[in-house]
Length: 92
Image (cartoon, rainbow, N blue to C red; front, side, top):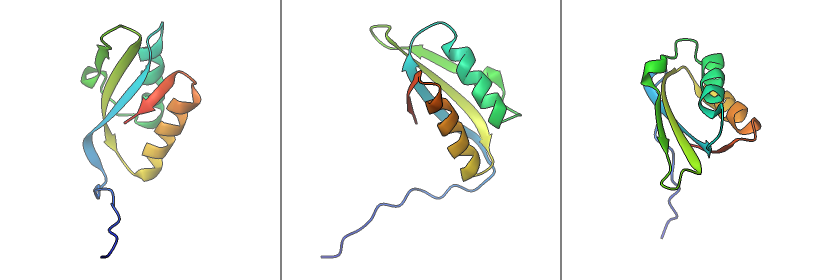
């Protein structure tokens, strides 16, 4: 039997309304920090697309944004900057 490798789906850039979900510990300024980083990499980011949810016990916060993704490099830079804050647990 041949071994199949999973390949990620191909994304055609630019990709409008590309969702990014950021999960981190709830606390003062977390949403603002996420928005500042997203705006740094996606100048046309529309803050009205922002969606925020608390976890069931309130310990974590989930922030979802929609951006126009321009390329893999942009997405990698966003991920790297979010993780470098030390406040982000996961980026999906």
